[in-house]
Image (tube, rainbow, N blue to C red):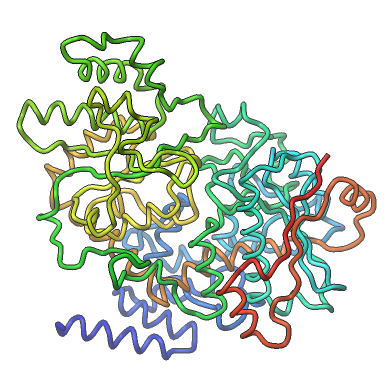
Amino acid sequence: MSSTAESDAQTMQSRHRLQSGRQRLLVLLAITGFAATSLASIYTLGPTLSSINDDHKSVIDSQSSRRLQTALGMYIDPKSVDIKQYSKDLQHSNNNNNNMVTSDNMENNPISPTTITTYTHLIHNEIELPKYTLQQVIEEAATMRSKYAILRYDPTTDKFTGYYSKYERWVPGCYKLMHSLSALTVLLRTIFPERFTRKSPEFIMGVSSGDYPAMVDQQCIYRDQDVPCDDDGSGLNNKAPVLHFGSVFRKAMFPNMVAMPMPGEHLDCFVSWSLSKEVCAQFQPKQVIGTTGLVFGDGLSYDDLTPQVIWRGTDFPFLNLQNSLDQPDFEDYVESNIDPNGSNPLVDAIAVMRENYSRLVPRWQGVVLTAEAEQEALETKSLPKVNIKFSSARGKGKPAAVGNPKYKHWEDIGFPLAGNGMPPEEMSKFKYHIDIGGGGGTTWTGTTDKLAMPGLLFHHITPTKDYIHDHLLPWEHYVPIQADLSDLREKIEWAETHPDEARKIAGSATEFMRQMGTPEGYENLFIEDVVKPLKAVIDAYVPGTQGDWEKKFKKTFVSFIDCPNPFGKQNGFGLFRWQKRMNHICKKWEPKLA
């Protein structure tokens, strides 16, 4: 181990031993090279997380803070401004927005939509959310077609119960909603134990889940404009927050919707962290081939990687509530437009697909780019620059794409749409990666897996995003690619002609994922993307007599998940039950709807 590595290891061990948040900040400032005297005041900005357990308190490092501020459009380069003055200005701004609001003066608590665009913006800037009651939570149900639930805590029974509207559709994606609610009840109890006891007031919140939000207003979604879909001039003040466990819209069409960790390994790992303070294996270096973990490609040199864009995945649709893009049928697209007995049906098929390129979902657009790249490579006798192929078909069990009857006609003419799956160890040997979005517009785990690898990520920018995307910067952690992949070849050429810059971006991405897998890094992520949103929603709820809205709630909503306190008197038992089988925590059933 080098002296630098030894020094870094000793520094990390010292930070583990520090108990004071302020001490951790000062050590961090020393590591990052910033003057403590210039930045220490930032630690005190905004409302403190006074009701959060001490175990969960942490300081967001300067790099993470900068990522968040950039994602929110408010990054200030510390080298270009007076940090002390900026701190005072931000503190003054926060103070002006920290007036407490009760159910009696909710109407006098305006938040201007021209200055604050989303609840995510408010949360990450530690500005209070507008107050809400059961009425606003019920009203949000009318904006959703499915997969929206009301989670209610009843202190008399010490139970969380999930409710579903009788007038929404029950769809397969609702099981992701059930999963999210089960995890959410554990997070609420472990992070805020003093808030959820038999002596506490009730609590109600709106929750949704799924690949992406199933909104009623599809016309607004089609327009894809950066304004609220129901902009009635009232701004954000009359909306209940909705925590969506999955991908959310990138633009502020539904500004009260907050992206939360996706159900599955992202959400489950945060639950495990809240219980055990151990980072999941999914976000740590893989130790043995075939097991869970990230592949960092240790021992591989960027310059020695195969210079090709690699992608393998499933033939999923793409944001089908937001567009009419096709997963092409061979008969409709190709067979009726080419002469199967012609001299070169493959070339003819590629030409037809190029003519219809704009009608295709992005993953099929990638297949077309691959077919064109392979034809060019035959002429130049070189390696194709693009290798985007389906390794599995949509369907039960995701059957293999190679040899699949669904693709027989394509394969008969040699169209290169199917390829064998690759383990991450093999994919890490390629220089370029792309995370083409699927049903919800993103890949959930695909982005983080590929960021860790030594190659460069071409990140697919679509109308949706995941919670983790707000921590990533274009041209620092990835090279952005348009939704229709129309600039992919141009970006490949840039990377080929700018190897130093491309190598630096790839290295920054890998380091981001390494840091995320450390206790400090994961705690920072936990605070930003779990603790802060939950606390903001808890603080915004106004309990009390709901009158006619209580009657409407009982008439319109039916229970479908019941979550008693899993811990009892022995927290270890609850931890065991969660880690072994989450379904033991909550009783679930399919509701009887209208």
